[in-house]
Image (cartoon, rainbow, N blue to C red):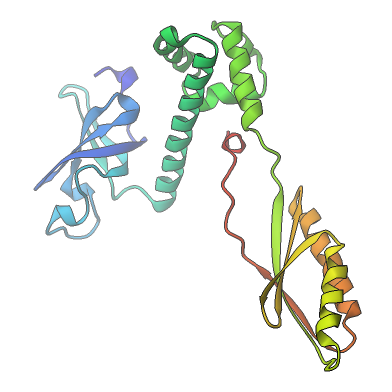
Length: 264
């Protein structure tokens, strides 16, 4: 192995476990042309290990930290126990983003009619910019570095086109659970319907949860805009409820999938 194509001491790497043995496991590094590295059993877990297969197995992908690089023996050891949960999450996110951007580059090459040269182009771009993340970052900012790349103009145009297609305006949603109950025994249902209809005019979507609860959802370019719509709807509803109970509480929304180009 050459020093240029090998990970550095302390570097985090994606490792695919190829063979588990009694005293450790041999792994491959997909980011380094499937280079083979070794994970010693003592670096699998900080606790005592009776059966290594209770912790790792063949085919598993892990995040490891390079601990030993023996240039003479040409061997690399990694550690699993020295990697924190946060480091694991961040590394997996970086790795997946790099793969997704690599696939987009291949699409751009195909669209530009340069498929026969895709390997040499991809290699050249990685030499010049290091990662696909950096390539798309430079292209998205239209930097001189990107414009000076020695690749056909039609490929540059395709890369910019793909970025434009994938960038989406990100709206933010907020949700509130509203408890609304009237003491009006004669026409309470009509009163509630009228209140909800008026509240919707503030730009919120209202749905029924279960009596006497309703869900108010608002969308905006940012959270402040969305919250302002909720505030207006709540003011309308509470002011129109003559006698009764009115309470509201913010709900947690499932995290939206991050736009790919919002990450670079």
